[in-house]
Length: 442
Image (cartoon, rainbow, N blue to C red):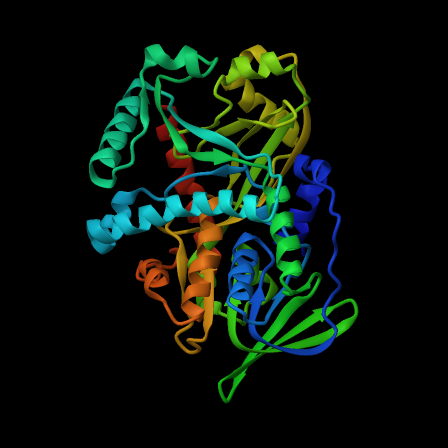
């Protein structure tokens, strides 16, 4: 039976990121036993960020990754580092009130600054580019977007530049869009280069890093936690005072026994991206003069951005059934031509994808296990985690060191399991997404 990990590995074989960021460092599987202050399950951006912060505090840290560092969503996403969460701030306000919602928004801006700071501190050349365009595909959606931008300026002090339909030709060479906002605080980058840069920094800070070391068990005895692992080299064991579960969408599959109730609160969603052959610089700049990242405001959305080596990276298709498109490059090229019909002479050189975890309300799901409060978890980034994962790692490190005030701002958000149980929740979601696709169309 094919697993999410199996499907992910197949989809990642034609990744532009993997082709343009060769791995210069590998970490051996865990053998034998070791002890540490904190054990981290998952070698993506959240786990790496937490490892860096904990090591900075002088704690001993072991990081366990079932595959390769950055092999999941952290190393193959659309590369857009955006302010805010995957859900609208109104959803957060409804749960925790305006004041706490403003605090969470401010932390999301901090998350973007954290990327800039880490790139400078650890000399990570991840091709950072300032700027983000959020664009509406109809006049009605443009009015809704302008109302949202006005609300964010009034209630959150977040100023963005409004772009009318008349302004569009100066910002994007596409007749598909009827208005938008430009956010100078957000931006985009090469996510795998960033992820591998963090891994190099963590290793230099003496974090014990292990790849191909799947966690198979978690036990607690007299306040001491023991994680068991399995690899091609045999079994391993890590004893720790605290544990972070940061496996996200893969954790229920790799180790369903670790926290079975958490898996009901997230769903795997397939996301797909393609990348063109290189364009002349002037032609690419004519498409998006600001070189900003771009995303439309549809529920089932398209997103795209220029790369540092003059390509157009285009994402858009999603799968809520774990079934992937048959001809990914051709499918994504069709989507690209909806926005840029003038690129019909171009072919897609790369096409890849994989899974992300979404929560029911699209808000991130952070917390501690009720039965084992020294075990923390981070999940539910819902496709909006490139910046937020880094902040999440910082917040959980603060909590482990004794100050949980900022972590608990997120932990107070309430989450419900997807309806239908294990058998029916995926068909129900597929039907729901069909409705939203129709709504976007009409």
